[in-house]
Image (cartoon, rainbow, N blue to C red; front, side):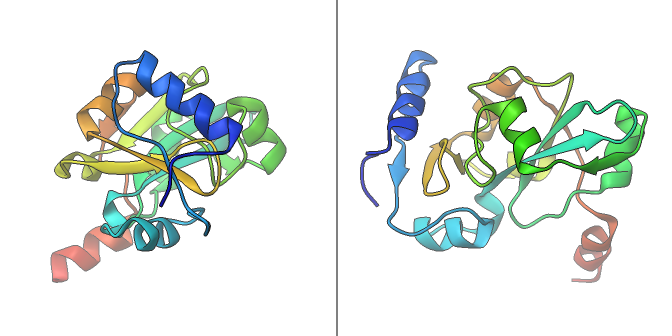
Length: 170
C-alpha cells in the first residue's frame, strides 16, 4: 500500500479533497480489480468493497449504475423492474464512454451519474467501505452515508435472491 503515483489516481485524490472527503487514495502493486483481490490487499471484509457496476438497457441502450457490496451479486430482475426494461451487458467501451474509466477501476463519482443509480443497502451496515479510485489497483475508504450522498443513489435491497435464501438458512 502506497500513496498514488498514477495520474488518474492522483486526479481522483484531488477530487476527493475538493468534495471535503479526506479518505486517502492508496495504490497497490497488485490488482484490486475484483472484490476478493481488493479485500485481500486492504485487509478488510469482502462485503466492505464497493463494486461499481454499469449495465446497459437492452431496448434504450441507457446506462444503469449499481453500487453493490463485494460479497453480493446483483438481482438483475429487481433492477429491471426499477428501470422498466431488460438489462444487457455493458462492454468495456460502453463503460468507458459513460464513466471515463476502465472496468475494474470505476470510482463511485467523477462523472455524471445516469438517471438510474442504485446502492446496495448492505453497504450501509459498515462504518467504512472501500471503492475504486480510477485505476484497477487504486482504492479509497469512504463512509457509506457519504457514498450515498455524493452519488445521489437510491439505497435498496438489490442482492440476488439466492444469496438472500442462503443467509436465511445460516
